[in-house]
Amino acid sequence: MSYEYSEDVLVENTTQEELEKLGWEVITVWKKETWGETGLLGREDKSEVILTRYLLQALKKLNPDLPQNAYDQAIEQISQKSVDKSLGRINKEKYDLQKNGVPISYTNEKGKLLKKKLKVFDFNDYEANHFLAVRQLEVVGELYNRRPDVICFVNGIPLIFIELKAPHTELRNAYSENLKDYKDTIPHLFSNNAFIILSNGVESKVGTITSPYKFFLDWKRIEEGEAGVVTLDTMLKGTCAKHRLMDIFENFLLFDDSGGDVTKLMAKNHQYIGVNKVIENVNDIEDRTLKKKSSLF
Image (tube, rainbow, N blue to C red; front, side, top):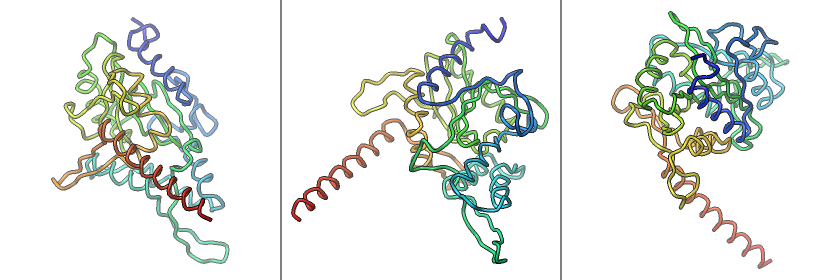
């Protein structure tokens, strides 16, 4: 059966439709990609997994009026590969750059050396970021080429990896046969990854780059009190809606290296909803308190 008419692609099409409803731009690049700065994605070749065209735009927008060298330094640090560290440790270091800023230095017009941390994402205005989902992106590793189903880029950085199978295929296969292979053959694609979604259209689970399959978990609810439903639609709404994605990235990812190597953890569905509900209640109390105080004057 050809790629265009396989059951896997029907699940991909559903994923695209749901992401578009959430405001993502979605494009399929298989056999369509053109190269260079003005190409479809701006990639120079298939080994690139950071879309530097969009990353540069974001860096300039969030950190205006700096010399080009400052932006180039930030892009180099985010894109740089490492061969002597575990994927978990690399991911932890990249996460720190993305969340807390990329340290750079430059000389101003007066000859003074300045140091600064460049913002990569806008965590206050989620819509200020650039959201692009790419279907069938071919990536070249050291020995092999691979073509993941969907990669979701925010400001040119591949934050979400989505592996999709046909509905009749056991979901575990997406982990054991595909994800493990991708991590072995194109590990640099996961250096900046936030989390991974596995789905066959019926079941959907989410985990991190260090999660064994048993720790890939359901995302059943969007809001507290809802009946739990395990669907691809709920998974995407719960984790890939722009404000939820950036909230999860900023506040609900954790790294543990107490056991030697790095383990990456992601909050469970009920933890995410529960913590945000507490914060919402606290903010409501503060707002009511301020209104009462203002009414006294």
